[in-house]
Amino acid sequence: MTVDLAEIARYMRMDRSVPDGALAERVAKLRDDALKAIRPAQTWRRFPIAEGAIASGGLRLEICGTLGRHLAGCRAACLACGTIGAEFDAFQRRVSVSSGVDALIVQAIGAALIEKLMDRLEDEIRANLAEGESPVSRYSPGYGDFPLAAQRVVLALLDAPRKVGVSLTDTLLMVPSKSVSAVIGITKG
Image (cartoon, rainbow, N blue to C red; front, side, top):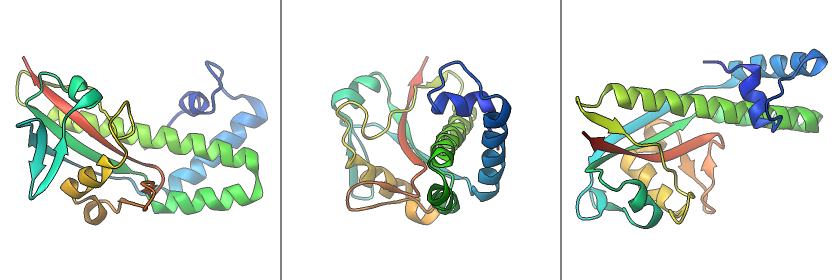
């Protein structure tokens, strides 16, 4: 897995500009070092939506508010979680100690990499859908009024701590930091 300089530049808030010269070399070197540090992992699972929720094994994720509107018409949804791994967090900490600029670049590289991983996960889900089914865009805890606390249920339903090594702190931060959880609705016809 890799990302190009234009994608990293987008996360560096460079609009449509692409790094050139010394900055391009710096970004490319940090990207190459970051790629050696990542350990991508992902998991997903399909669930029916019934009685306004996704439920299994005594766990229940309410489908209401902005999530409910996003999933309107969906009778099923996939819960998904991806991470680029704890080794990336350690790499990011090492870089941050020596250079604030490099820390910002590595932050952008990590953001681009986790988004690429989640795009691949969506492609995998799409490839496993029945004929006539389509995914809706992913919707993560923290969007709209979908509370961050819902991540606890999403990660538990996926068994994410065991399967991909993703957990939550008491303040609901994901560990490793470059991790994403999401709900992806499935529409038919």
